[in-house]
Length: 248
Image (cartoon, rainbow, N blue to C red; front, side):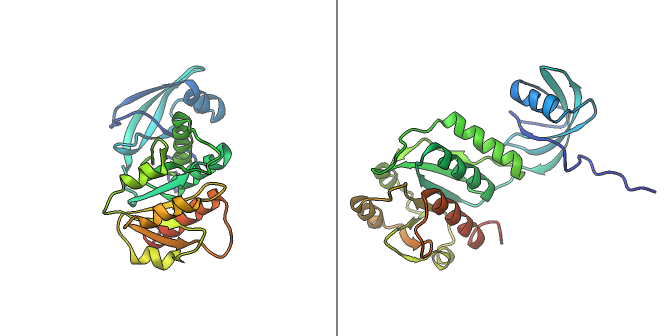
C-alpha cells in the first residue's frame, strides 16, 4: 500500500497570527495574509496551513474557505508547543536601514531572544521604525520555523544601556582594540549573556572606556579582520549560539 502523505505537508504555508490558538478555533484572515494565501500560495478548501501565535505554539489548520479578500481557517491540532530560546540579547548599534534589516532577519534565524538597538556617537542612523522591524522579525520567524518571536526593544543611548545593566548578565563587548578570543570567553561565561557590537564608525574612546568600566563587561575579539557592523553582530551571535546556545 502507498504511504499516507504527511499532514500537514512540509510545503504548507506558515503564518503568525494573533492568539491564543486552540483546537477548533476559527481564524479569519484578510489583508496581506489573505492575499498571500489565496493569490500567491493558491490555497483552496481543505488545504493545510501552519499557524503560530507566539503564545501556545505551532498549529495545523485547514482552509475552510478562500475568497479574494479573506481566508477562513479552522485550527485542528498542536504540532509543537511554544518554544524557549537561550537567554541571549543582541545589543547592536543602529546601522543604515538595509544593514540593520539584515541584522534583524539573521538574529531571528539564529535564535536570539531579544534585540536591543543601541545609539552611539558614530551611528549614522538615529531612528528605527519598530512596526517595520517587527514585520521583518515575523517574516524571518515564519521562514525559519521558529515558534517564539524575538523581542525588539526601542533604541536606547549607550550610556542609558550601561546605567541600567542587569548585574547577572555578562556583556560581551566586541572591542575593535582587541580582547579575549570569543569562543573561549563565551564558554567560560555560560549564563545569561548579551553581545554589544558597534556602528559603521566604531565606538569612540570615551564610549569604549565606559563599556570597559562596567563590571559585567567581557572584552572579546571576533577575529583578525575588521568587520562591518552587521557582520560583527551576526557572526558574534552565531558563535555564541554554537558555544552556549541551542545549536549543541
